[in-house]
Image (spheres, rainbow, N blue to C red):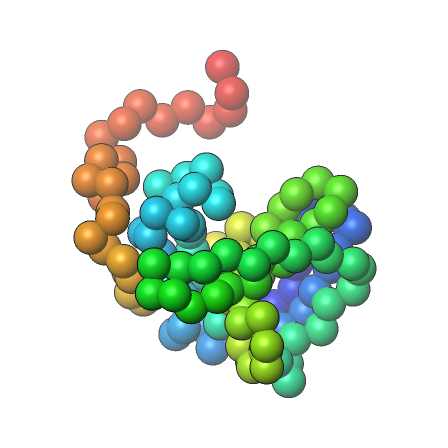
Amino acid sequence: MKIDGGCHCGNVTFTAEIDPERVSICHCTDCQNLTGSPYRVVVQAPKDGFRLSGKLKTYIKTAESGNKRMQGFCPECGTPIYSTTPTDQQFYGLRLGTIRQRAQLRPKKQQWFRSALDWAQDIHALQKVDKQQ
């Protein structure tokens, strides 16, 4: 599937070819901290189908496993765009919120579920308001 997207301010844009079956939710505490949210939703994009326009700032974090992950984000508005390995980038974990076709990309699995916040698993009963009050 061909997708496109970018950051909030428009400084960074991208296109990619992805497999919609590779959409996942990550509940790890690093993703919670880096997003300010209970989880992060990503889709893997192979290097050969990913094109980026604009300059990113990067940050390398070390996961609980000891693996290093490079986080790429817009230096102007701070929107997280992807994560990848710091060396030999073969796949980019694109952030679902930056993809224009995000409504079509339903997650297929959840990772690091041991860190999942129980209240985030069922929000159906919460009051729904169409716009900010």
